[in-house]
Image 1 (cartoon, each protein chain N blue to C red):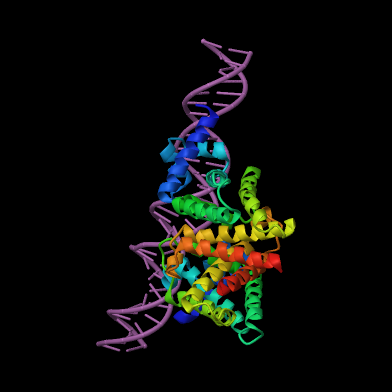
Image 2 (cartoon, rainbow over the protein chains, first blue to last red; image 1 turned 180 degrees about the horizontal axis):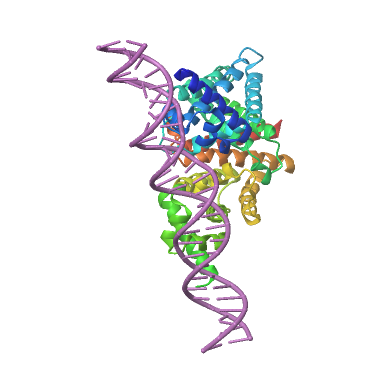
Length: 197
Length: 197
DNA sequence: AAATAAAAATGAACAATGTTCAATTTTTTT
DNA sequence: AAAAAAATTGAACATTGTTCATTTTTATTT
């Protein structure tokens, strides 16, 4: 069996573990047992578990990008931004465990590195929204608009960590999808004001 | 030495460990070594490390509340909301490790519980801002305004996780304080629009 | 085809984690 | 002073990520 096949196999099996049992479901030994490969082989292939998780997160970002990119053509810029957000929230809610792992890695990744392809995917997702942003706020200078886009996306991204667990339920009865949509629409309305001012 | 003194001692020593070495600096054995008490004693006093961390996070929230509550009287409602946010960001940046632990626990606390006094502190912090919100948006119905307040606070809270590590620096050169202030002000501007509509 | 060399896979072993609990020490009560 | 109760202890357990000498497999050479 070739090296690629081993990696592919391990990644697939690992993904199943995460989907089924969350981040805790993914340990070197559980992956070894589920895949049939030894613990050592996992380390030969990926170096360490962090790298393995990073690959999983890259695939998650990829799936998100795939989903969002199908929405490019439809509707007005405003409608599109709302569609993006709804699709994003839907994706996160349907892939809670995978998305949790993304946040978990981001938070705990204090001095480790993100791979280039990973960073590129993040940028690509942001760029998807850029077009709609430009159409909505034509009179805002591009650097300023990109800044606002980052604020918007980072806020929504970080807020989405609340969608992956039930921690929020202990503080508020707010609907999670509503939460995200209110953030988007209030922010967009605010941008409209700042644009005219 | 009384039970209270032991707990107080352990909590203080634990807090030093977190401040100095971050969340990883706080383990049962390191706390045992730093405090002079055995590992077993820590468990007798707190049951488990999660409870200990929850106490640490409660104290962190307490310190934040303390700081924010000194700002109650000053300026207009709008100025006050900006002061709150700036004070919040300052607090987080000055207590990165402590605040990181708050986020870390929230994210990983999948089916565990928050103590009542902890939840109450969160509510109290939100209520601090309620007054300014009410003054700014008098024509928004109270339930709607509280909803928006929650969206605002939850967004800012979750965004603040980016302030505790350097993960964000790998994605963007955006200034962290600016990031939070832009979120607040754009959101507030948007609320003004929604109020009139 | 056999012998040799290179590469890959293995899993026992290590350090560090949270946690438990029988044994010990200390304190309180009788 | 003795007995009972309470508190403290730290060795031991299960589970992490990780390493690396050993074994097995594959490739190369004779």
